[in-house]
Image (cartoon, rainbow, N blue to C red):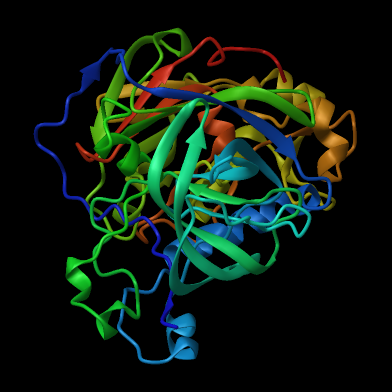
Length: 423
């Protein structure tokens, strides 16, 4: 039996001179599926630790090298961790008849696997094809080991044929979910399977993602994903939507502003963009124009250590020993001003309410119910390293986002939640 390891989505894409700066569109063929935001009670108290570990794994991702032994490849093949503290999950069906699985939505990877819970294992059906390959993925917060299958995947009422996925035999670090659906772009995934050189030239190999397959099979009009998250005050809330193959005009206001994927490494390996951040009416500099990424699997909004110091000075926030987050007094919160994220030619306001953790959920992260905690924190390294920020789900909940792998673009638009005072 041949041993393989599933690839991660790499977006090694140069600046696209033809990228469209403004677009406002809807497509006739797309797949819209609700997603639920949930707080994992066992992991939320370590929310900052999870996020910083994920950021470190993104930065330290080792370039692909061919090996001849599983142990050597595992040691050299770095992969992002999965944030299990707060996440968005969706339900898909695998096989025929379809067996339901709840999967984490991850733009930081492109492989899909199921069966993390022993009570809901992968079941072979009439559409399941065992490739004879084994799959092993090591995450900073756990791992999965299993078999690689080609099978039928049902999303909503749409059936995607011949989808490559992993069926877990053993996994660790995925409480309450059945696996991951990777929706990261995959333009340059060739040669990312460490043992495929045994049987073929690695540069000729590419495994389509769920989005790729849906597009190729004519189920969606475009090879892109629209993401509509929303802030919530509940531990679990079906308050978001993933749109495969298009956008939903009802989910955003104005136009979608597209920017090319950054050319700066290592941010360009993921959904990377260039942006700057300023604070308040005085436009106090927080982070000069630099490269970073947008990521559904990171909960907080992380910025470089030196940028966080400037943010602390501007806000007067202090570190909270119980949560690790920055904390404000009520008076300080009353004086908190907006952050301004400049992405391409547009500037997006991140309001005071957007900058704080929902106070109704303070105790879920180990905090005090009447404290004010900030969702902006330290990425764990100084600026100038090629990945100086992560705009995580707390950022994305205030905007509509589009990950367009075909045109090497990231799109962002305001929504009804951009200025909401729900926190």
